Image (cartoon, rainbow, N blue to C red; front, side):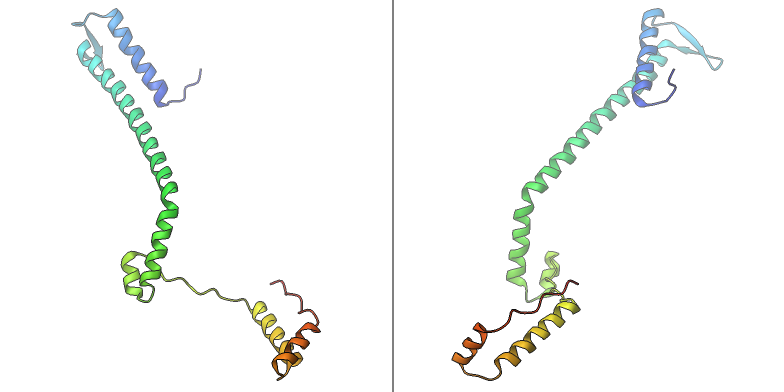
Length: 156
């Protein structure tokens, strides 16, 4: 027999005890518990209280899970709108970080370029400058048309 305690088994055991008292003992009967006589009504009240508390816990747990699911669905449905509101606040008050802090919105950070990307951009600019030199508009167009392809992008 599995002797693991859990709420379901305990509630079932309490219900069986309660059913046994109702079936085999008179309402005014007493039973000796820890050397003291205890009225059946007191035993029934204790058992019924445990059963009722278990049912209330089960109902509260179900209500809690339903509320969490409802919140999750609401947040998922309103996420795009709230993101747009944050963006509108950022656009309207972006110049003043103190006002943005009042809204709980931070300024957008400028993206940082990696060293490899900066080096590749500098090499490309230098090659273009050497190729084109200081020429007029028409000469630049001719030079661009005859230019070799730019160097491959490094993987960083």
